[in-house]
Length: 562
Image 1: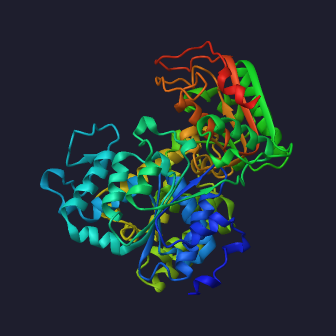
Image 2: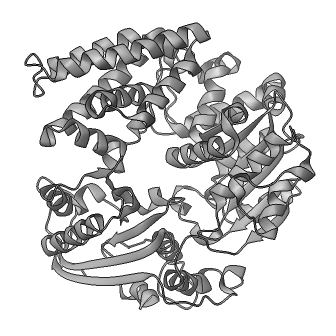
Image 3: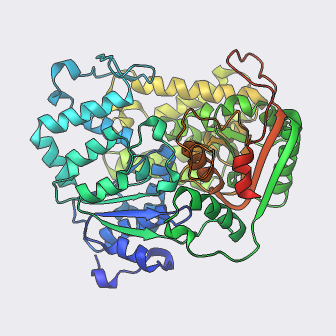
């Protein structure tokens, strides 16, 4: 522990004055930060300050709430990198859904009987909000149940307030009424210090119930100070000017647009193709050239506003023809965030890519985290080395048939002998539910075998499942909070960027919802931005829904980049 005045930013970073104020604040704060302002780094540095100076007093913890699993994971990894394992162990980074589920799972008995769930309940996203079941629930119902627990039991409320001295909320502009009710009920009249970070220009969840004026509302409800961050550390000058062009329409009073950006660096390409086949050939050729020139595939993202699993069919086919691994979040749905899958995938990496120090460290850290003693953790670590050696011999022998699921099952069975079900029980209550671990394993097997059938290459299959060394295919909504060297925005077309809203952005015929979404997309790019449109998008095989083959470019959006 060090005195507050002796603390300096981790990794030798220099914080701008307003960022330094946020990091050191002892009061509730709402931070308005534009794209590339370093929101994740800001929160990581604030966590480091609170933990190292004892402002977050042991055994109290910091709670960080994000909207997406990958954003929560990125922040957790950043704090671990900045503060080390001892301090970061008191940093809980999770989504709103995970936070609600934690409350429900831990305090189920507090719920009125009609709201209680069975011990082995399932998450069913198809369930309507008013259909209460004991064996299934959706995420909105989980939040409602969490709120009822807070409202009905003062002990639970006291426990949460005592546990978390500080709370971070990222992407606050997209907070829904139910999410805000949960946060407000727990922390509004507490001693917990809440830091909310967001950007009104990136408000893209109105369709999901994001509250209007939420940042001003928080400022009033929590008596919070408002601090703005204006600098863009992400994008090169030419790309920053594009973002400022859009920001002038979305938020004319924003400090983000006040400072002119000089310099000519940054690449922009606006490409028009006759068909999606021609588009696939052109874009895949461009990606191949990027990779051959040294760009890491993880730094390339293909963004689509909607229906990526259909829009990108020709492109995925062409990328695979060129040997380029691509990863679709719509298809995988964050499987790699499940601890069972994490253990299995890292084990396979060690068997097929040995040595892989990162995979080995992750498994070692997992064993240390879940083991009841150091002796058990060491036993698992020693056993892992022996198992890897024996499984390497097995997969290189004639007995191993890579096309046989049964042959693969031999590897997995050996793994679960070393990492038995009992080891996972300490992770959370859900892992103690009968049949849950088996269900996770089956889900992981199904996904792995499906990817293995694509080309029979285990390494490539693992890449597609985890996104490791792969070009990412992702919706604009899922891309929020992420950044990439190269961004391809596929299909800047009226048929994809449509909206039912007549709430137009000032001085335009573009719905605000559409322009906010476009702003998020173009602001993901650090060095190079590519926008495409086609005249014809062929109907995907087997697709029976509405599909317009004839396409027109969205001139109103393209105006901002030309």
